[in-house]
Image (cartoon, rainbow, N blue to C red; front, side, top):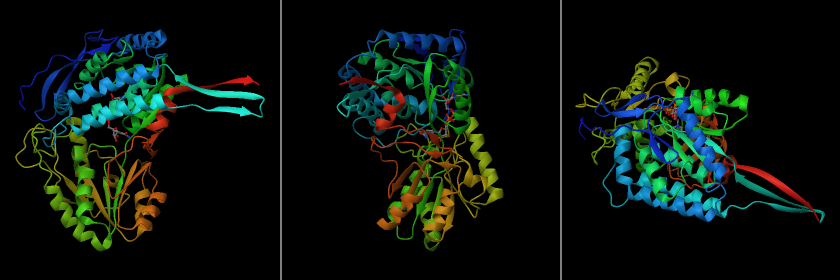
Length: 487
Ligand code: NAD
């Protein structure tokens, strides 16, 4: 990858057209590997949001999408899914430029993350066609049936850590059920979304159904949340932003759905298959440089295997080679931004006071440019320490010993978050015992990340409100009503 990579300016996408900001304002997109500016991006404000919402509302009212047969929406979304796979290399290249995620090993066919994004579209395209409602006959005197209709214009607000995968996870149900959308991608990942806009247009989605306003959270994001014609906001990001959105949405009684952060426990019992658990734990915290909401950032290890685990984990971490994220051999890319780099290194300073850095804690050798942090393990630290309680969002794990299942549960559940949990054990009894008692929305046993999209995705406590997936997305993105008829 060259430091000189320069892209054309990035625009909004409103009513089927790429459009600069009404004010002409822009902000810089920065490549986190080279620390250079790749291009300027339209800096949206309330005027741009108003234009986008007006286009979305007009498209909704027109009915060419909102009242189209489900089979038409299915056809368009399937075509879009095919195009995502066909253009997968292009999308991944832009994602790497915008947020530094490694392209991963060379492989034939579409990139796995793009296949997953395409699956999001196909899944909800089918779901909306298959879904049914209820009809009841009360005492042969009253026939009632429910209707789930497209609801209107939604604001979709997404983070930068998996830009296209997380965006499609929201836009797929939103659009499949017939709504229109105004999407505000993160200002830290403003590049790859352009291809999605082109893909929806080519797939035959009517103009105005899907719109993008680029910009900062406190400008474009706030304006979108507050716009009176936006009936709901589906948000993925940090708990602090969710609180702000909730407060702004409340006076207008808008519906909101929040997928937030985590500090997930990865619990390794003495009877686990360590040949799988150790690389699994490393993947859980070093993948995407730890910038994953479901990162297993608190590793809990049964005391009898604690020392053996530390030795194996250090070896596994050493295999996370840092470097140019566009090289197929690189596993660890830079953090997304200077702000995120400062935040994570601030936590490393704190770790030196609250505990001990077992390995890592600095920049990978030989990489003087780019927002890199080495794979890092923190030990000899209290479960109440800030580094064990706060989401660091970097390749940084805390490792704590535990005595038995109840001790592990005490430590794991001592968290203001409750997104994911991981358990490694050969005992089905232990697996069920833990699954029933861990205070998290999602639990993976002897595995991680693999999904069945029919299951609800989401968290407890500060990790979120609401669930995405299967019929739970349908509930959020439709308006449910009933009609009744005397018999
Ligand atoms: P963030 O909250 O800073 O930003 C997310 C989005 O919200 C961005 O598009 C931003 O511009 C926008 N935004 C910021 N302030 C806003 C405001 N006041 N009003 C409206 N919009 C606003 O989060 P981030 O740093 O982009 O993402 C990292 C966070 O996201 C982490 O906490 C991570 O765990 C979480 N996350 C959660 C999931 C999940 O599914 N649960 C998935 C990925 C990331």
